Structure formats: structure tokens, C-alpha cells
Amino acid sequence: MVGEGLTDIVIGDMETGDLPSVLEIERASFAMPWSETSFFNELKNPRSISRAAKRDGRVTGYIFASRILDEGHILDLAVHPDFRRQGIASALVAHVIEHLREEGCRFLYLEVRESNVPAIKMYGKFGFERIGIRKKYYVSPDEDAVIMCLKLEE
Ligand SMILES: CC(C)(COP(=O)(O)OP(=O)(O)OC[C@H]1O[C@@H](n2cnc3c(N)ncnc32)[C@H](O)[C@@H]1OP(=O)(O)O)[C@@H](O)C(=O)NCCC(=O)NCCS
Image (cartoon, rainbow, N blue to C red; front, side, top):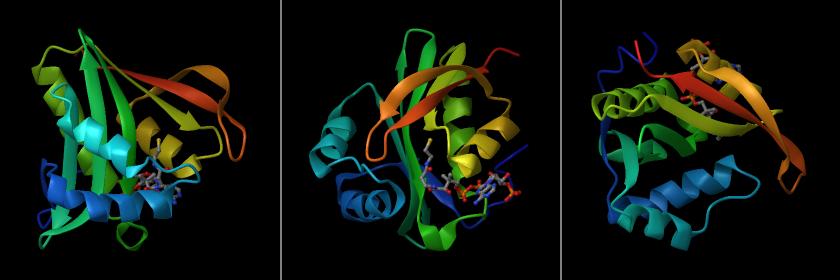
């Protein structure tokens, strides 16, 4: 199973105090980063699933997801550049998958830039399949999104 074996990483609910570190990672990770307000609103949204991965109390990565009825959606995921390729994103995705399965969710969706080979490879390892394309979904630079879906039912 992907994401196992990270004994020094603790995944927990994100707190407002984590936001400065989250913003720093977001800005280092995306051409069009979420704003502080977007993060704050998401954190305050009772429907939001927002988790931080910490090592020695330091935020190393995070994930935001949501659920409507039996469909989950990964909204944002990033790992600090200094902590990549250590299984942290996989641990965060595995955490969300488990949480949504427990809630009876049947499908998990996400969009990803079609040039984002690292992320697409990682999602592929979990069994996510490409189910479509959203034309020009992203800007700066303009790019299509690959829509991926994981069936959560056994
Ligand atoms: C994509 C991202 C979240 C991956 O985080 P990570 O913690 O490094 O990922 P993991 O260590 O769990 O990697 C799991 C697998 O994904 C694939 N992968 C991850 N990074 C990769 C890279 N740079 N090149 C190729 N494959 C990669 C590998 O198959 C890897 O398994 P391996 O290390 O055993 O080969 C991270 O690179 C990142 O934050 N990128 C910028 C933000 C982003 O693109 N977010 C996703 C938006 S949908």
C-alpha cells in the first residue's frame, strides 16, 4: 500500500496556525496558488476535509478535500519541496481515501494539470484512472486538466 512506513510523519486536522506554512508551501508549488482567504474559508467550512502532515511539529505537506453525498473531491495537495519523494503526499492521499471510505463515499475525483507527471504517476499508483479532460481548465500557463477518478468501493 502506498504511503505506509512514514513513522515520523503525523497527519492531523489542519489548524489556523498552520496556514502561514501552508501558504509558503502553496506558493512554492503552484503557478496559481490559492490565496490566504481561500485557505481560511476552506478551513472554516464544516464540509471541508483539511489535513496537515507534520514532522517534529513542522508542516511538510497538506491536503484539502470535500465530499458531497457519495462523491469526494481532492481540491489541493502539496508537499514542501525539501520533503518530496518521501511518501508524504501518498500518506495524505491514503488518509483521505480511508476517511471517505469510512463515510461511505463511492468515488473520489480530482483535476490535475496534464503536464504534472509526478502527481499523475502518484495518483496512478493508487488506482486513479483518467476519465476525461477539462479543456483550458488552468491559466498561467493555459493548460488542460486531466480528470481522474478512483472507485472507493471494494
Ligand atoms: C505531486 C506531489 C504532491 C508529490 O508529493 P511527494 O510527497 O513527493 O509524493 P510521494 O513521495 O508520495 O510519491 C509517490 C509516488 O509519486 C511519483 N512521484 C512523485 N514525485 C515524482 C517525481 N518528481 N517524478 C516522478 N514521479 C514522482 C512516484 O511514483 C512516487 O513513488 P516513488 O517515490 O516510490 O517512486 C509533490 O511533487 C508536489 O507538492 N508537487 C507540487 C504540487 C502538486 O503538483 N500537487 C498536486 C496537484 S493535483
